[in-house]
Image 1 (cartoon, rainbow, N blue to C red):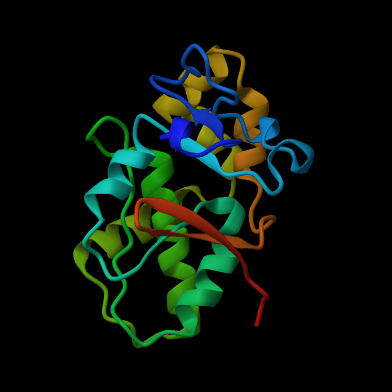
Image 2: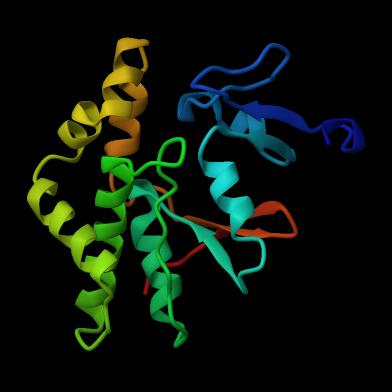
Length: 186
């Protein structure tokens, strides 16, 4: 794909590491404005990209995390459609940090509309979030994937990812591309 996109950067990870020949790995600290502004990025990952590809037939797909939770919810509050919140997980299995993030998103959505109808998965995600919300950094560090990342020297990445609502951008997945949209808060 990068060969068809002159000037694009090849980015991402497989099993936590940037494959040989990639321009950037998976650390958020690598994606500086100087490095990526105005560039197209060809990105792959072990869990996130496969989850997105399974959602190709959905009418609209957005990506969310603790860092852009407010922006995602601001977009969703402006809509009246049903919303499905999906955790990417890790290699086909649930991941604590993903479930907790889903619970945080759903909790924030419910705060804006207490009449939302939730399924059991949403209730479970909220319960996980409520049990762990007091320490997002600790949650990430003690999850099995977070502990593994920290053991590889990526604890600073976990600290970055634990920051809430610092990225006012929502990425929409359309035509096998993520398109970043800046979101102004309501």
